[in-house]
Amino acid sequence: MSLGIRPGSVHALLGHNGAGKTTSIRLLVGLLRPDSGQVRVMGVDPYRNPSVRRHIGYVGENEGLYRGLSVAVNLTRFCLSKLAAPDTCRREVARVAETFELSAILDKKVGELSSGNRQRVVLARAFLGTPRVVILDEPFNKLDPVWRARLRGFLRNYAEENGAGVLFSTHVLSDVEEVADFVTILRRGMVVFYGSLDSLQSSAKGIEVRIASRDRAGLEVLAQAFADGVERVADGFLVMNLSDLKEVYGLLRLVAEKRIPLDSLEVKRISLERLYLDYYGGGGDGDEGN
Image (cartoon, rainbow, N blue to C red; front, side, top):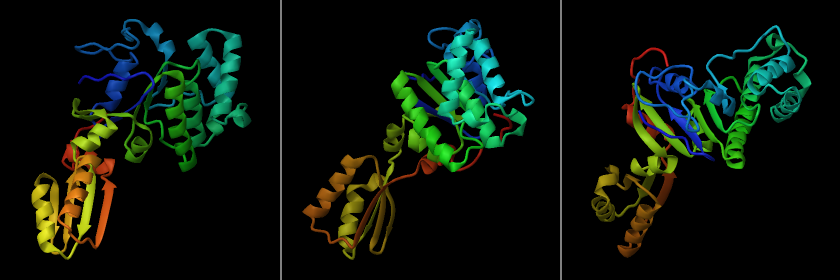
């Protein structure tokens, strides 16, 4: 596999269980040594030079929290190990506690918190020190709908305002549609798609057009003109997938030129879930692990 994360952008890493998402993330943060090839974070090998990790905000598949200690102590201990500056850490803990609305529970032991609140502590910990690279393994897990939406907005703003590169893995494709600029799809450790979300939709003919008309001859004209994108032709009905809005406008011009009467016209983006399943053939890999 080969991929890069651009500063100021949000990048989604997708794939079925066993595709290699978590393994890839562990390689990126320097927790695993690659068998071959190179991993560079800000130009540095994170396995050989772990000091670069202080510039990385990381959420792994395990919480890694001390459940018998308070939220404040958990955040402070991690901050001190990362930044080694007590005054800075006091400010940083207060900042992330406000951002993730933890101020009211700073004195509570982590073991007393709900799973959603613990996830917010994990997220807050990742953003201590304003990291330039943020790598998150399933960050939306355990969050309620309100906090899912807040996190999507936060990631988008954080990347833009700090020029940070953000990479996250998820199985929830609606989150990807809301926040991601770029997408990588893994299958059995291989990249089957790498590019912008827009290019994924256009390369896979990501716009669905449904036309209803009593003019059967007119529908045949449209079907012949856009034969590559036709999905279904029925009596009085035509469904086709087009690459982009330019093709949609061309279709509408042809409708006007041929004076084809329309009973209805529906244009919509094909869901990311459908495009994703197209790359997987609608099924899983049958692999274990991540």
